[in-house]
Amino acid sequence: MNSVWRTYAEWEAQVPAAIKKDSLWRMQAYRRALFLGDLGWRDVTRLIGDRRTRALADQLYRAVGSISANLAEGYSRGTGRDRARFYEYALGSARESRDWYFKARYVLGDEILEHRLTLLSEIIRLLLTMIPQQRGRPLREAEITYRLE
Image 1 (cartoon, rainbow, N blue to C red):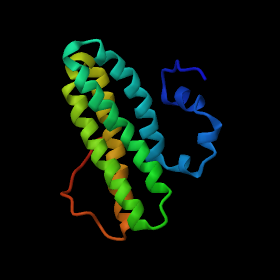
Image 2: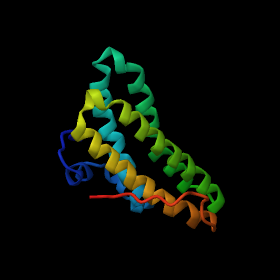
Image 3: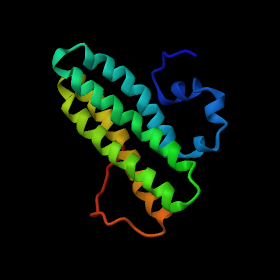
């Protein structure tokens, strides 16, 4: 597996067939979260190089990895209510990741920060749609507009 890629399409092309053949792969939020996990690996490698951000790197990677992991676990649950619970965990991890990325901006730079925040906002938006669908009722959440470019 070649780990050198510059675009989402190049990344997707190198994802193993065993993952792509699973019905979970059809979930947009999962694909984006898995992509973010791979981006996070590169970002964390950079953060570990600066003594000041080593602990932050650990927290960031745990939060980023938790998004797709919770989506995968929730997808496998038998009831909508059970699925929604894990999707809510993924939502919490996405928001936590956004927070850690903001704190890492001094090392990662503006371009990477903007890209990761945009990707996380897209994941959050998708989850805010998926959770009520699984629960059968809306979340009690203030109206938020995310601008995606």
